[in-house]
Length: 76
Image 1 (cartoon, helix red, strand yellow):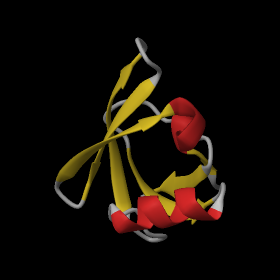
Image 2 (cartoon, one colour; image 1 turned 60 degrees about the vertical axis):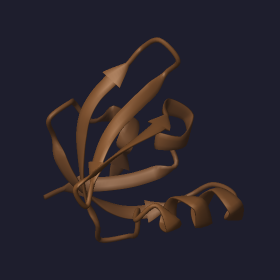
Image 3 (cartoon, one colour; image 1 turned 60 degrees about the horizontal axis):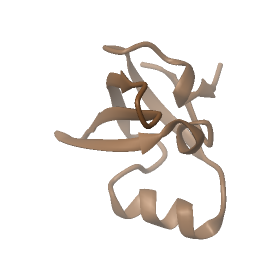
Image 4 (spheres, helix red, strand yellow; image 1 turned 180 degrees about the vertical axis):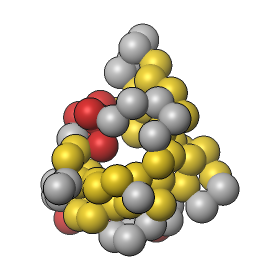
């Protein structure tokens, strides 16, 4: 059952199922290594600025809450 990335708790590992949003947004995330099937771990939520810190393929990325809502994930 897929949920949006912004709903998972810090420390949780998930698999990316689908990337929504505009084409330019999807392309940018794919360039950063966020492809369907990729494992993603939520590191932390930063309430100031509304940012989520993620670990993807050994690298740390930050995405906004609104952007994370466009990413469908499922438990590993």
